[in-house]
Amino acid sequence: MLIIQNTFCADHYKIGDQLYVWARNGINVRKGPGTNYPIIKAIAFGDSVIISDTTLMRYNLTAIEANMEQDSNHKVDPLILRGYWVKITFGLNLSGYVIDQYLLSIKPGNLNGQDAYELNFLKIIAIDTTWKNPVKNHGNEPHYCLRITFDKNITRSSCPSEMGSDVGYEFPGFSIEEVVIFFSSALNNFNDCYVYTNWKEKLVIQQEICTWTIINKNDTIVVYNYCNC
Image (cartoon, rainbow, N blue to C red):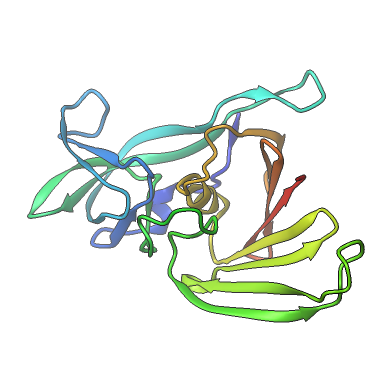
């Protein structure tokens, strides 16, 4: 079974920290640390919460179901995000328990973006272009590489290629599980994806005609997105 966290989410926060909900459909706040407890309220994507206490109650979340590896009979394990139930305060002094996998320290920048970049929910800090020579079979017009810098020095680079464009992302100081949460929280999510490589430091995810390769490289998570279109 592929559990992509070497550490639990709890290692990334402490009591008193303000975190933000990154579950696209929101998460349920319950009266106790378990799914058997009544729901107090649902909190939405982008809402802020304060960690008021931690528990030892674990909760594993299946991000992508088990599937068959492409072009083989090898069954690939499901993609599991593991975490704990934590106590939070939110709203007007309300409190309750939630699972912590989709609580991140960075605040979403655009909650209602449509038809934008995969990271349209992060605040854009800068956009830069660099000159690129004409691409073969694309005529004589010059093409440009586009580099977008988001919060926390997250970057997205896009350059023209023979098949369309090569897209890459860099997440300095982030973990693989946090990056998976970023993309699974996007409008273009992983609901219809399957994993076909189970490596500890390299995760390959296929979505229709696109392949996402997520690599842990020198404490920076690098993501390559290739679409055969």
